[in-house]
Length: 242
Image (cartoon, rainbow, N blue to C red; front, side, top):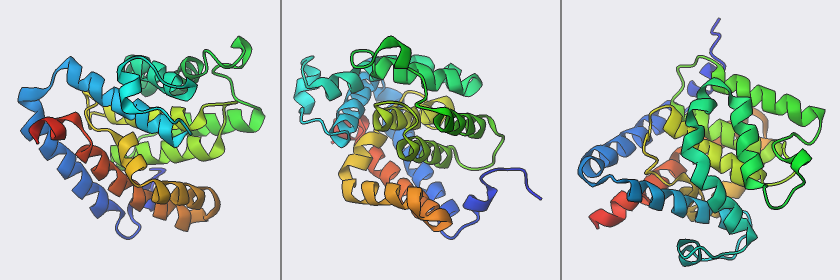
């Protein structure tokens, strides 16, 4: 019997082929456009675009130009502040994921929560959920890294283990998994923008993940592969090539 916690999901209809196709598309984009064009500025633009999209999904009314000029509402500022520390957290996500998750929430909530609530779960059930997410991130698996990222995102977004900023943290961790596992080491794909472009599907599939059992998880997995393809299309590499 397999000890791979995600083996069951990779065997469901359409999952493996969807993620193989999405990963191929990301690899082609990064290879063809990234090698000569990549710069710290391109990564910074990708992170900013991701922060903006994540903030809008969380209810922000700020425009991308607001963030570029250092302005924007509180939600946008929180997302932007988190994006600034995101890549430095990648090593911890691979070795001490609970600490990484706590740090990300502490940064996102730095201006809105008392210090004793930053980076801390809401209750014991939330602490248990965070522990399970950590175990998933540490577990050996043959599942695609993109799929691991999708599941961690959905788990954090639907369980809401922190007192605030759960959606922003969930989408940040999703991006970070892609960095830490070598899918997108320079963080040039903008998965948050993919979710924003497919917002009705994003929100309905998160509900399915939360309430729909195995079928809901399956539906979320298939949706997320599509969203990552849209996130690749939103990369600054695509825009600079246009």
